[in-house]
Amino acid sequence: MLHIVNKSATERSSLDSCLRLATKGSAVLLIEDAVYAATKGNAAAAKIQAAAADLKIYALGPDLAARGMAGRVLDGVNVVDYGGFVDLVAEYRNCQSWL
Amino acid sequence: MSDMDMEDDGSGIVKKFMFLNRKAPHGTVYALEGLEVVLITAAFDQDVSLVFTDDGVYQLMKGIDTKGIEVKDFSKTYRALEGYDIEKLYVDKTSMDARGLTEEDLIVDVTVLSDDEMKNLMEEQDVVISF
Image (cartoon, rainbow over all chains, first blue to last red; front, top):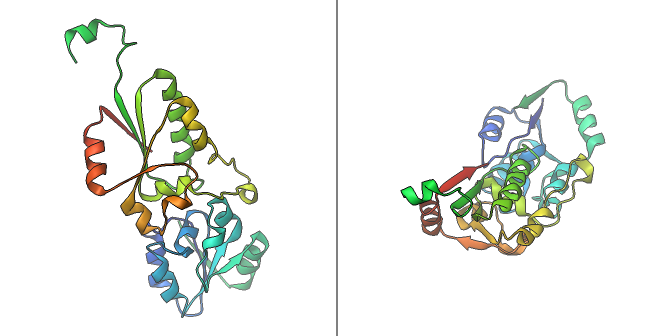
């Protein structure tokens, strides 16, 4: 399954719920305000890095750039563009948006 | 407020206004709308403090490039606030630390406040408006 998270982890619990319920081998795509969780020094960074052992973690590049965060992405997080977003949706059998 | 003040037409009264910004930019419209209200307030010659806390500190990030998401980049506007005599900009150190940010990462000069300093600043306001 592809999990899509769009809320900031320092404001909402969406990322926690997603990481709690995502099965091994799933992908998590961080978009909009959720991209902050994939940046160095963020309070949620340790959760992302721990989750990367069992899940593939992606972050949307244009959303990182729009937030001044393009140069601060954590190691182990894959940055994708809109085309990559489409590829992920096509690659996984189903998807869940943690709105 | 005294009776004298009440009879005044209001034009001479200066209150302490705090705008408390707690949302990241772009994900919601709060940051942009808050900034618009601050610019309007500048026309009324009030004592304005602009505070950034929680995800609000992200509003001041350097290097924002919104071309890819096709929305307005309003981050430069924070640098114009000085021209509207809005010079009291504060950020909350606890929020900066939780996001791995320092003053060097921000687009404008700010005063970094401890929790105690934040509490006192909030307490001394006449009006607090939150976005």
